[in-house]
Image (cartoon, rainbow, N blue to C red; front, side, top):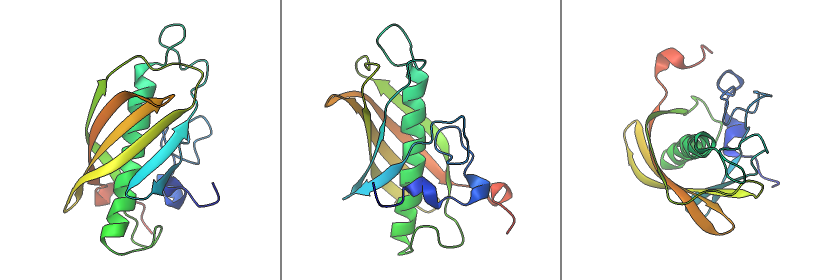
Length: 157
């Protein structure tokens, strides 16, 4: 995609997350984008993301839902404030609660599509509902309560 991903706007000090940090060379480096009123990311699991032969490890699924949701929360907060992504001060979110329902086994070796929607924005809290699909079938559904990163974890400009 030609547009910058939500995670590409994270300041360098906050771009190290295993799931979505662009600076973590060993991480997943997922990329989320607005698509209308929802966000979308695609990820193809590696062969070592295995649970049992032919199927994806549930921890990877949870990580994809988690990081896509916190990215969605960040982008939604910028939108709610009428601000451009990446403007100061940074709006970065962390996970307060992660709930994942595994609906069917997720096949290994195919592209996964992760879609997020904002359910609620209230103060420093954003609730995001997210689905993870393979071959057009929803395999997992999650709800993530994201909270704006506390000041003590923010980089000191």
